[in-house]
Image (cartoon, rainbow, N blue to C red; front, side, top):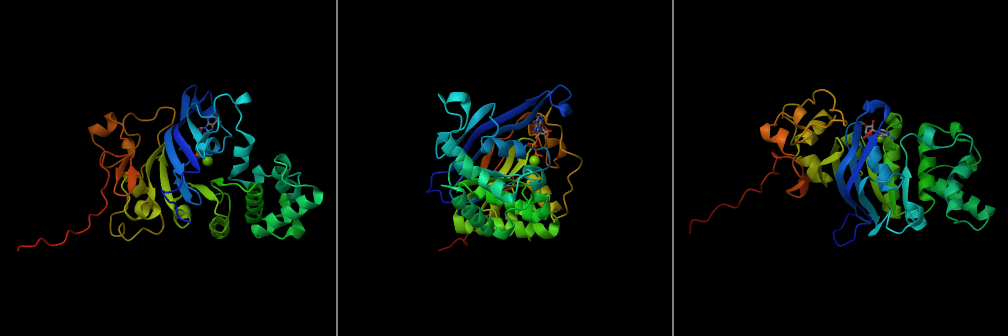
Length: 341
Ligand code: ADP
Ligand code: MG
């Protein structure tokens, strides 16, 4: 199912901010992990989120599922804020938690090694009281394992008895157990061997087609999300640099940072072919002290004085959005020749 503007978003994030204070790496400063992110996720779509390590992807993911509370801004499920006023204890309501699930980066650390696969997948069923009795629970766990391509015969084994790819399938089965409308997948294939990554990405694509679940699919590499995403958002130092339909972002990137990321990707799009390769110099600046103005200006070959002074807003460029004073316009259609008569 492709995203449709006729639908109401299933998940909405508005102006999300998260700052960490006193972290080990911050040397006493405040780490601005997420600094003003807006996004909408539509029913049944996949929104890819990419960006270099440290740009705030995991922090955003945790806020999107309610594991972390934003300092500012809010996340809403079908229009209902996660941390609404008057909610006792400030927790996310149980029915929202049920519908918004997460798959973590490393299945080795996110699956309890002392629990069998049955108990791992059954846990959300227990928490949300979704199985009548032990037998119904076992049947449902078997069904979920089959759904992710694992044999139910192995449900009484432990995570270490599975390969990395199979362990991540267990993590996916656990996320699917509560019949979520949204799954936020935080670099779900980054810890896997290259040869296994494509299989797990394909599984996500297939699950999405058959179940209609909306996915936020996070990766540090544009190539990974290319084939599964309807839309793609590119993050840089806690903010969205560019967001739009995958075809637009890959085919006609507007933001210099997206161009640089694509240029570093193994298979450049035709429009980029022949262009000189753009090298991203150095590491991203520290999120403790993001550069003033456009946070990408210190690494940007297009930057002028304006870029170090004025922060560009995310603005429409063709059919997508980019936060750049010198955003590349998509190629104009050739106008039909003027008539002389
Ligand atoms: P990504 O997932 O894109 O690599 P993260 O969201 O994990 O980015 O981290 C963004 C920034 O926030 C990094 O500088 C990281 O060191 C910092 N950070 C993340 N989590 C914490 C935390 N719990 N305490 C302190 N700093 C954190
Ligand atoms: Mg991360």
